[in-house]
Image 1 (cartoon, rainbow, N blue to C red):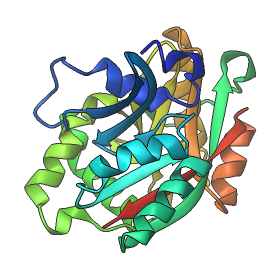
Image 2 (cartoon, one colour):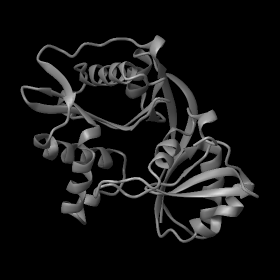
Image 3 (tube, rainbow, N blue to C red):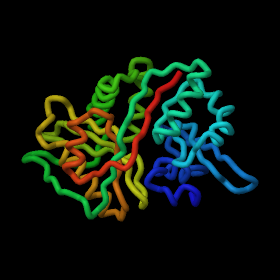
Image 4 (cartoon, rainbow, N blue to C red):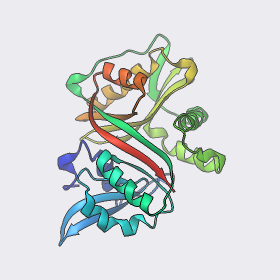
Length: 264
């Protein structure tokens, strides 16, 4: 934790995973598995193997040399890290004849409390934490989001397992509902004082361009700053002008480039 905290903005997800080491994890959560690189007893690098592959902000060629014997054992995985580190790793995996189902550039955005722009929900809409009755709507949203991203749909191979995974994320889900119908969802996957990380943002097509996503994200940010968080961050797939305009209109600013890879 002490190694990661100086670059908390870039290492937020690793900080969250490190904080869960040795603790209690719910049955629906994948137990984190982290790698360290050491010079003597001093830690000089951190990466996660599970639940996804994330490299610390300073990971370079020397650290990848140390970690590749472990990474080679992974049958598949999702990588989401800074552009340079993820690109170096991609080259190494490609040289080992690993295939890729997904390869995309994303822009990381950050919002700090003083930059917040408030957006009230449209008339009749309500932002709230998800409840059990929202499960089927969240399953549909998660599947639709994966399809729009061109990613495989795990529901096809294991419907009960996919539902368990979504149910395990209910406490982190925030939804905007109109007349009881969930139309927007977003997940606060990291809630730390250093920052909140929002992922899995999705608005059903029939409800787009109605201000629901702006109100949902603005409400999540208000909740974060009320809890004492220093910032809120999220990522946008390069070329998604609508999302970029939405977040920039709320005060978010870009702070880095990410690369997301799904490898076999």
